[in-house]
Image 1 (cartoon, rainbow, N blue to C red):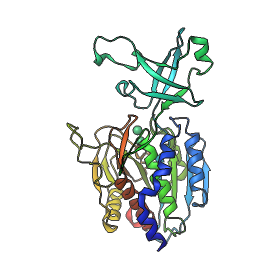
Image 2 (image 1 turned 90 degrees about the vertical axis):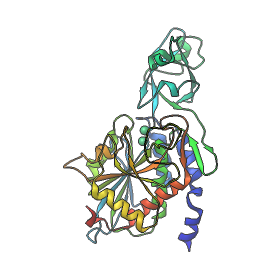
Image 3 (image 1 turned 30 degrees about the horizontal axis):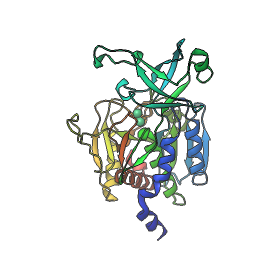
Image 4 (image 1 turned 90 degrees about the horizontal axis):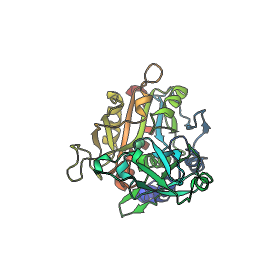
Length: 350
Ligand code: CO
Ligand code: ZN
């Protein structure tokens, strides 16, 4: 009965942790605050927690391997895109470069926040044509009167991320860094819902660093864990908005099981075990081919002698903007599918 009431509460009960996760500062290389938040959430729900040399948070749920179980690695990345200060001019304006995939068009009118709480907005040089807008035609304005004042608040190499609150629009949420804090939230919730449930698999829940700059944390984590199967949990784009690039994934039609992106061709047996898990649990799902972009599975599957890997995707609109939108039904479906995968004996699957 306890499980049923928890299920009825569903993903709605996750909104508080999602809000905390998306509003936390954590560009690539500066994931500490996100890591602390997740550690606090999952403490007591797993058997072991450690942090590796690069900063990945690795949580182990022991299982009874040998009884049809496998060693499973589930990865969600903690980092988000951002901007990094490269030069401070005499008037106190900051020139910057990107950390991960940042389009200049998504920056106009936005605000960013540095680790020490300094907030800035963006300006641009005069342009003959909007098409000429590049990051090096832009600057961050923190309201400093000159270089000395700017340097007292921001140093070369300091990194900022979008400064935005989450908005609950009823059934859907809009926030910065849904990529990939929504994946972190899904994994955290799956950990909580499988607490006390014996899994035939030895499950490593890994919260990775530096995905947005080249899937880097997942590589060392996968090497260290050396799993039989890898599954990344991340967002994917959709094809359901006006004049969108053709893509069959829709918001609200369930979590997506990846077939291919530019970093990985999902291992057929991992893809199929995910499809079987979704079908047998009655979870609606979609199949996804993403024409641009990759995930942690891209580096997991080429680690060591090769690790069969797949991806569980949460559909999201406006990815890599300050207003990424997800559907709570998709989030709930992703949690249920992950729980189902953790509970199934996976040794025969790969
Ligand atoms: Co991303
Ligand atoms: Zn991502």
